[in-house]
Length: 248
Image 1 (cartoon, helix red, strand yellow):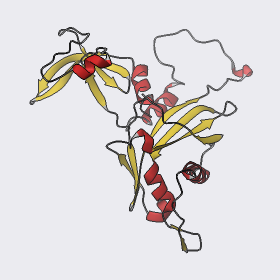
Image 2 (cartoon, rainbow, N blue to C red; image 1 turned 60 degrees about the horizontal axis):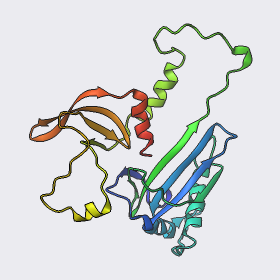
Image 3 (tube, rainbow, N blue to C red; image 1 turned 30 degrees about the vertical axis):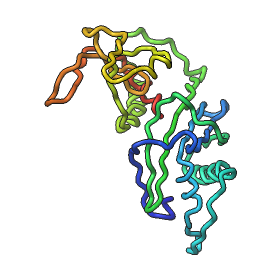
């Protein structure tokens, strides 16, 4: 996209297309390397087709264009495009396999849009990728020092660097007042004026939810005419970071 249209912009989008209009591929890393797991990439079928059919500039400066791929060949063409992109990136360990997949159901995602000139592709990622813990050489093995309640000085720089990668990620947070299970019959019979009782007392704290994880609890307050949350409990940092994993 950058070669065709200039600078690429990456920003938040309102929503992804409906499930039947979404193209999904999964990038898998095997157990042999440093990484293991997968990344599922969701994108708009129509916008991917437009991207693949857009004219491009060859190395000799000539402009070429291809016909828009048909619905059956679109996943294979999209995978070929992704492989070309990955090959041009300085990746120490590219994925071992890229293949079409079904769009995961019930997994919250944050949609983004990738823009380059007149081209735009809405997409989202579900990241289930983890890094293997490196084995320490036998000759370097030492007895573990007694715990002092303080983080290890050797582990701090790496941990801080990993967290810094996440600090600028925007996430959607919501307040959950409670829940209730309804039969479809009850749902269809619900109308204006009906009251649904939730599983939470009015004095109980409400949940601050990111992804599908509770990251804090508190009480509802008014702030300049808007609802707000006065935080009374906060989850462990590890739980908060797990909530970010649920979104990508």
